[in-house]
Image (cartoon, rainbow, N blue to C red):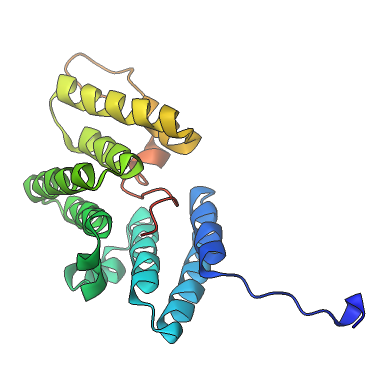
Amino acid sequence: MTSGCRRERPQSADDLYRDADQARRRGEYRAALARAGEGFGRCRNSGDSTCAVRFQLLEAEILLTQNRVAEARPMLESPPAAISQSAAFRARWLLDLAELRRQSDQLDEARKLVAQARDLASGAGDPALVAWIELKRGVLLADFDQADGAFRRALEIARAQHDEFLAAGALGDRVGGEGQSPRPPANLVSASWIVPSAVDR
């Protein structure tokens, strides 16, 4: 067979997830959603519910980045059963649900959900996910010292994981008035609940 007749090998689910995640990090949300949808369809057709749920979570996270709450709400409020198969999946879902509550101005409920997510992620031994949860806690906390502590913990983990995107969010913009809680840059506040591509189990 000549090279001109050679057929390209279809992308694996891992490749599709990586592409969707990288497009999301670049702010290419339409492309990210398209890749996530393609990955979800492939996993569903193969009957792999664990594979499918990570794409569902990623899709919800991309929608939340764009404040498209109405579209993200159905999956997060009626999650697939496969979420219960993994502590990391459940922690990630709780984190996404917290952001849904935050965008619905239910801040107390959002803080409770983030605390539950942190406990689960810590027990699962998933440092990358813990870092993202700490970053989200920092965004939600009103107390300056507590928020700064959460950002510092996220930064320490991000540096250990060599995750520049997360480190940038954790560094944040600590320049502000007296008594104001530190906040990461605006483009990272909106993405602070989105977990890294390494969290795919």
